[in-house]
Length: 261
Image (cartoon, rainbow, N blue to C red; front, side):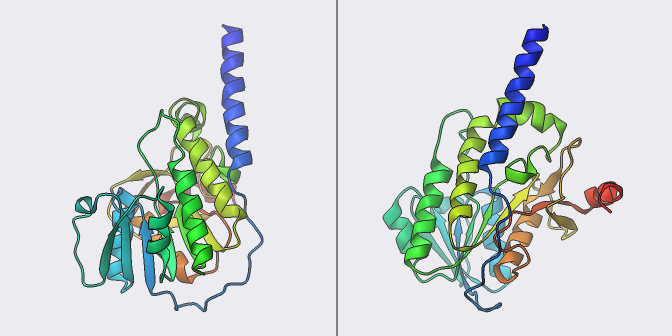
């Protein structure tokens, strides 16, 4: 029994160490290439997912010209005069190149549902996106990943650290951590956004963000609508340029305020 417990804890520690090492850490901010407010044309990658649909909807509400890059256009079920839907696969480099051309920024909610099957969709997909952005001189990238990577390891709560990540999301997060590495190694004006567990709660705009977000004990949950709101804020805000802030509901901030004076 003791040997089994030792092996279990060793495995959990190893997973945590790998995710910490592979996930991106805050980088030195680089000068921005475009003046605030000049971004008008936005490409949304992963537009048919829960967060992706919120990004498209809210970007249109803010007046952006939006291009939604999707494999199955029928899944988006949204029309708007300033919305262009482009069918394509993020693993198709030529299709990604064509979609990125002419954009001012890229917002990515790239993901997949193959939790237990090795996949490089996020890694290879992001590689294609980064290459296309460099080729077409599109500087701004905002990408959503998750708490539990890089310097946020352990901050999605004890249950996630001891069970969910090591036994349910290990393969998925391996791909996601490599995605972060690729972004962090680029010279683009990137921001990585790390939410907790995503929900379908309506937009509240009552959330906290930063590098101390998250809890080592309790699991943080946040609505996709609030995550999309925060991601879009990063298009014309340099506060977190070349950094990976976490995002969580505002009530978590009050609960933890005593531990972070």
